[in-house]
Length: 239
Image (cartoon, rainbow, N blue to C red; front, side):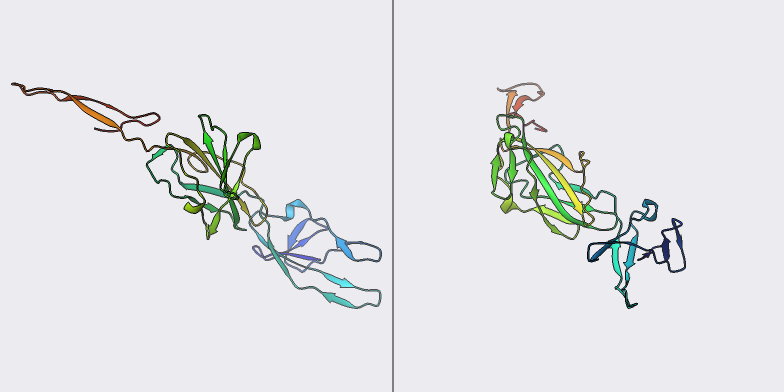
């Protein structure tokens, strides 16, 4: 078997655990009776994260016939991909009809993201811990555990479209966590705000305001005063 690092244009010498310019063919261990396979262990030091490799095998039978396979290309990738939540923005209060979708982007060092899942959970209140599933468009009780829903991926962008999002509840706080997976099978494990673990609150209650002074005719320049309020968890930002 020949192993070639495309990025540094070198062949791996299994016996000496080093890369070299000359072609090197390593002997494998045959398996099966009759023989129908082979295995070969390669030193960890041969692999560099993000590099592309190609391998070729050459077989010989008892009659002396020899035939080589074609090159098999692959990327060695042991680095987790990353995902980013664009909507909702962490800590934001959203008005009626928003957010209309849950969306974001993902990135990977070389092999590329192939999947992004999203965890959508109600936080606080009597429904605390309930998870949304896009598979059946239903909220599931906390006792059923964490539920990850598959997103739609286009390039490096992902989304749960509006047709697959729930009807938001006024005053409810939600947690959104995104988790990506790359072509090499690495799965994102670190989640933090405001990147891949965001919370938001749905607030459709309209704030109240009133003028308390002056409340009658006056003969001097008044300083206007009043009251304002908003139903929890909302908060008045200006009058």
